[in-house]
Length: 168
Image (tube, rainbow, N blue to C red):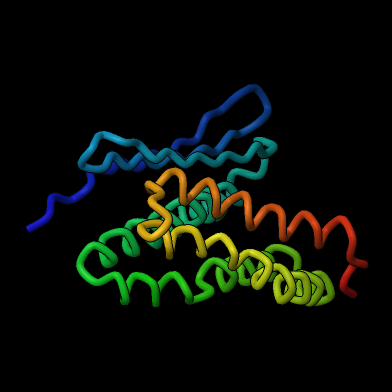
């Protein structure tokens, strides 16, 4: 059985003068001692304390959900790389981002624009995976392949941003 990562979640409400500051922080330490820390905060007028609870829950969800997705994919891909890849191909982040944006703004026009931009940018980011997929054949280590993938994807996206008209 594989050891489980250690994690901690802290959520606090601070009263500072006439304002309430909500903070949420999550820390995960994996087997090698690497730490992943994600934090979020909001500042509110003190009279908005009733609204503070829902914001605290929102911050915690925004911190915990991505962390759960990352840890799940990491753990599942250890046992089954194909299943890990399947989870990575699901647009979980997009679904969560669109849902959060909708609940925050209720602006369908902005969401439609973001969806059109995403349709163009997702294929342009795919060159990131090429060096990782053929790293062994090229004699690259993990960080070399990761760096090469970042450079390829950045060049593709950068050229598109530089030379293409805005999608509308």
